[in-house]
Image (cartoon, rainbow, N blue to C red):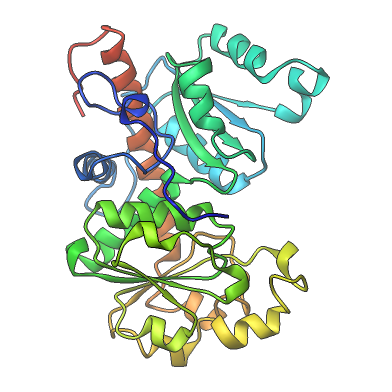
Length: 338
């Protein structure tokens, strides 16, 4: 995978007033837009760090269209939509008309005709959500729940919300390390783009040669490549470990789980090289004993479960903002209240 930036014209994601109407990628969005998502997500978490409910999407219908399996992401989107009082439909794509020969375009048009307001789309093809938003259903809010190796924007934003809430430091002052299968990770791509947009000047990418992407020169000096784990995590504020995909174990990309853990697994000794208040993150699901030890995953510096809660809040924010942006674009409301 080439790690160079894939630009998406801002007009695809933003309405004529500059407000979010689709959310398909981090790239191309401004710091102001990302901050608006984070600030809105904060309003859905109360002073006791519990999620609240809101009627903001009452009467609206959210359809989860998962062409690729992901129970965790689909479930959190469903929870987010229901907390916003929306109707939620989970479409069984494996049994849909596309499996009977109908084109994707025709399937989506039929679903749109069923009074869908928002499509949450996960697809194995990079650019699928962009295609749907631009060419197929531009009047339905399209939320990208992961497309191929390209992007996972809501995962990036829940990571940003977790970093902001847990470190309580400006992004400009943070050193962030991302470790693991960078080459095949849409999470890594989206996290790097979000960190850069929010002003982080020290982003460290750590992986063996076989799991490193190319195209880093386009990201500039704030993104640095490390092959040595100890050097990469030294004095970090945030360590983010990525799941090693099992299909790459015992392949040319990765010799073995044991070898990866020996060279790049996060353990006590390596965490001790980071700052004392460094937080540990993981998008899940975890391979304990491969990219991270159980002791650290369950330890006081891990904020992995907080990421799950923050993920629902961020997805609530994105659903609400994009729906209101669509309504404003179509002239059905004058302004966005959130």
